[in-house]
Amino acid sequence: MWKRPEDEENEPQQSTPAPFNAEKTPRPEPTRRGVATIGPSISITGELSGEEDLIIDGRIEGKVNLEKQNVTVGKAGRVKADIVAKNIQVEGQVEGNLLGEEGVVIHQSGKVKGNIVAPRVSLENGSKFKGAIDMEPRTSSGPRAAPGPKTPESEAKSPQKGTPSASPDAQAKGSIPPSDAAASGRK
Image 1 (cartoon, rainbow, N blue to C red):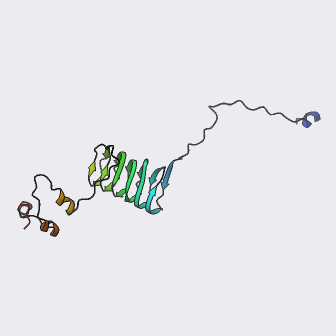
Image 2 (cartoon, rainbow, N blue to C red):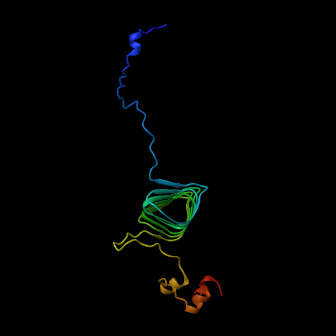
C-alpha cells in the first residue's frame, strides 16, 4: 500500500530517543537485601551468626548471635536456643533466653520459655511466657547476661527476704523446712 522511494531505504535511519518521563518509567521492585530467611523445611543445629536481619520459619537448636540485627521468629518457627539480637520478635515458639539490645516483643501467637533481658519488653494479649524479665538499663561495663535458671545452689546463696532458709540437708533432699510445711499443708 505505501511504497518508499528507493533512496530512503538505503539511508541509515536515525532514531531519536524518547523523552524521559519519570512518572511513566516503572520502578524496579525493592530487594530484600540484608534479610535472611530460614524456611519451614530447614533445620539448623549449632551456632548462627551474621550481619543480616533474620526471619526464622524453620527449626533452630543451639545459639543465635546477631547482636546488631533484628531477629523474627515466625509463626512456623521453632527455636531451642538463646537469641542475642538488637530487636527480637516472637510469633512462634522459643525455648531459651532472649537478650534484646533495644527490645523484645512476644506477639499473640508467640510462646517463650526462658528469660528476657531488654530495656523494652512487650507481651501481647494471648502470648505465652514462662521465665523472668530484666528491664534494667545496661551498665557501661559491657553486655549483660540473661539471668540463669534458679537452682537449689543459687537459692541457698541468696535466700529471699522474709522467708526462712532451709538447712543444707533439707535443700539437698528437696524437702520443705518444718516451718513452711505447716503453711503449705504438707507433712
